[in-house]
Image 1 (cartoon, rainbow, N blue to C red):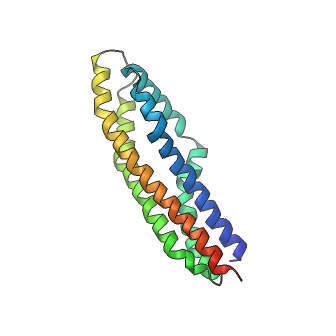
Image 2: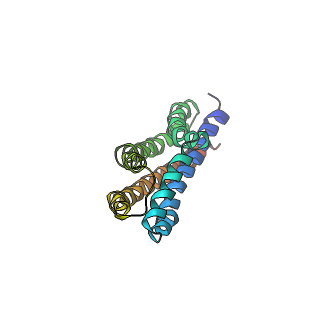
Image 3: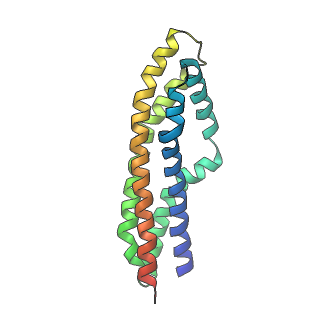
Length: 169
C-alpha cells in the first residue's frame, strides 16, 4: 500500500468519525434540549420524522464507513515505514466506535423503534407516557454515544498525528 493510500484511508476514517461524533454532539447539545421545551405531541412527531429522515445513504456512509475505514487504515499503515505508530491510536478509535455501535443498537434504536411503533401522536395523556418511556433514557445514552464517538475521533486524530510524525523524513 502506498503512503498516500494509507494516509487517505486514515484521513477519511477520521473525517467520517468526526461527522458521526458531531451528529451525536448536536443531538446532545441542541436537538434534544430544544425538543425538551416542546409539548408531548410535537416531541413525539418530530422524533418520528427524524427517525425516518436519518435512514439514508449519506448517514449510512458515515455511520458504517467510519469503523470500516478505521480498520482499512489499521491494515494499511503498517506497510508504510513508520506508519505503525498510528496502530495503537486506530485500535483505540475502533474500540471507542464499537461502544457507540453497541449503545446505538442495544438502546437507542430499540427506543426509536418503540416510538415509531406507537404510531402518530394523538395529543392526549398517552403521548405523555410514550415520551416518559423514551426521552430520559434516549438522551442519557445519546450522551454516552457522543462521549465515545468524540473519544474515537480524538484517537483517530492521534493516529493521523502519529502517522505523520512516524513517516516524516
